Image 1 (cartoon, rainbow, N blue to C red):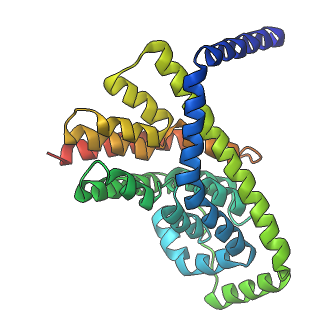
Image 2: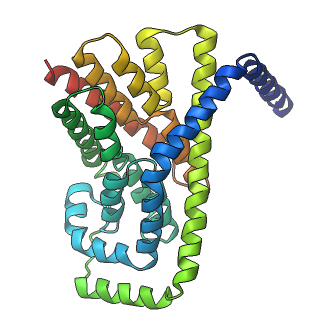
Length: 314
């Protein structure tokens, strides 16, 4: 059985290699485009937050903010206060940063596996700067803001649905204790040079994984489009479900109604694209956090956002 699987995998890889050679010009162009996306959008928007989040975690900020928002996080989502760091940082920085925050807090034992799974499901936010900046090129500001609002609401709804899935215990703690913990962390992490060096290495490694994921997905869509000659809405759907940025550009260039443009844009943003999913899996590969609940939550959010936008916009 294993030999048969190996033969099948080799056959698929050889077949893909042939397709890449046949479509070499298009593939090279898609690789260049992935580098352009990484250079212009991904690296500038994620690198500062990756470094900042590592420093905040190392110096005890998670305990501090966790004690402030522990009531809010527990009563709304049944998770411990440390999860507030993931929630608020993910809103600011966008995907796939949430996976990095979840991984760091899980490996440092700030959250358990069930909390990590839940936070991954309802903290998968697109960067607000990216959404507003990208959609403002095609749609008016009012519609763009409503799409972003719908995206947030869909994630919060998922959080409410999952609140009774292995709920956390409400931990009692004081703000004074959290401040003392921050002070202790600052002393134990006093060698700032080592901390910043480790943060840089970890952040660069994660960003290279993200670049590889974007490139693989863009090459895949290029080969499929060339083989099947997809056009119109079908091409937009494929590209948007695989790589969100490309899908948004294509769907808003189509000659369709504003309602459909906004609805498909909301769907792509909430799903994130297989590119983002692959990035999340790559970041979490050395943990036992499950991916399947995240996939289900993205499907729910994308359908919810699509229907809400479709029926609200006239």
